[in-house]
Length: 141
Image (cartoon, rainbow, N blue to C red; front, side, top):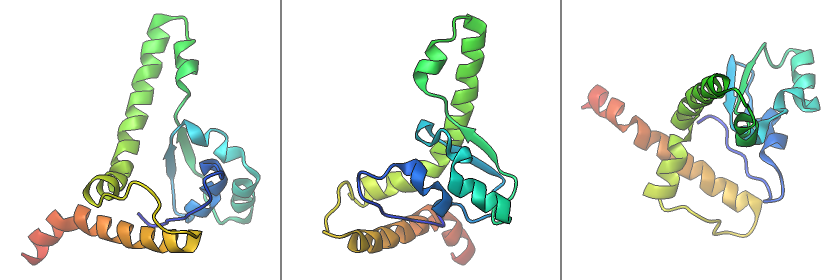
């Protein structure tokens, strides 16, 4: 995890996409909430200025769109593609599992975005350590 942001609850995820990209990405995998992220003005500006390279976007399709495919073989192929995308996204979601289930952080506890952001910084730093524990133990025994 390299970037953490905190916004109000009424701010959609797709509006924060440009803040989450650092410029060295080659591929971006996202859920259906990020449909159209590659076409947003902020992303296009970063690409035009050279701050972002040529990114290949793999954004999940909405379920209804896949269910609407009438041809069974095409629908099955689309499901396999979406399953492959979701497997890659699941690896990125693991730190959220650690924070929610191991650290029991399930709801906001403080008033103010800054306080919550600082708590998230701490939790994600600890989650990175938990996820790297095995490798660290092997290296430093």
